[in-house]
Each structure stands twice: as C-alpha cells, then as structure tokens.
Image 1: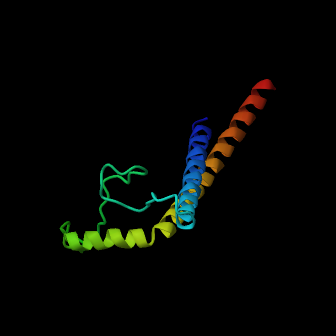
Image 2 (image 1 turned 90 degrees about the vertical axis):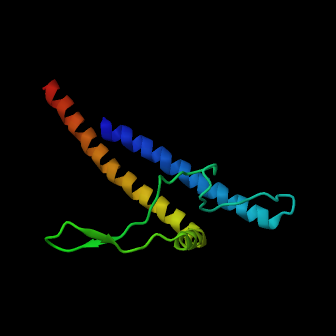
Length: 132
C-alpha cells in the first residue's frame, strides 16, 4: 500500500502544480489584456519572503578531481555577478523550466504508479491464494 499512497500524493502534487501554472499564465495574460489588473509578477527570486515554491538552499556545483587522488577543486569561483546573471537566465527561461518541472513530475508519478500496480497485483494474488 505504500506505493499506492505515494502515487496518490504525487498525483495531487502534479494536479496542484499544473493548476498553479495555468493560474499563473492566465493572470499574466489578463494583466496584459486588461488595464484594471495591475499586479502580477512571476519569476525566481532570492527574497526569502517570496510566496510559492521554495527551492531548498540551491547551489550550482561543479568539481573535478583525478583518479587515485581524493582532492577535488571547484570548476567555478564564487561570484555574485555570476549568481545574479544565472538568476536572470533562470527568469528568462522560467516557462521552459516550469514546463520541464511538470514533465518530470509526471514521469516520476508514472513510475510510482507502475510500482503501485505491481503492489496491488501482489495483494490480489495473496488474497486469492488465501481463499483457496
């Protein structure tokens, strides 16, 4: 039953995320079309008071090391300028990022659905074998 419960939870998350995307895009469209709607904003932000999805303490990392040596070095130097530009790039590509997020959520949900179906089939087989 664990996989089935996880499937139900993920299905609800997918539906909620999809509904949020639709609501955001509708608000964005209405804001452009009507002059009485003057408040709409969407995008990635570093403001901790931002409403919406919190992406855990997120860092881009890349490091390199050599075989036989446990030492590694960072491929990027820390740079506030690079961080600001990366954030800007994420906002330029936000629709693509959010669409890809939904796609990945749906794929992961399908995988857990397959596990839930196997779990269900096993339980049915066990139930039927107990009756005989």
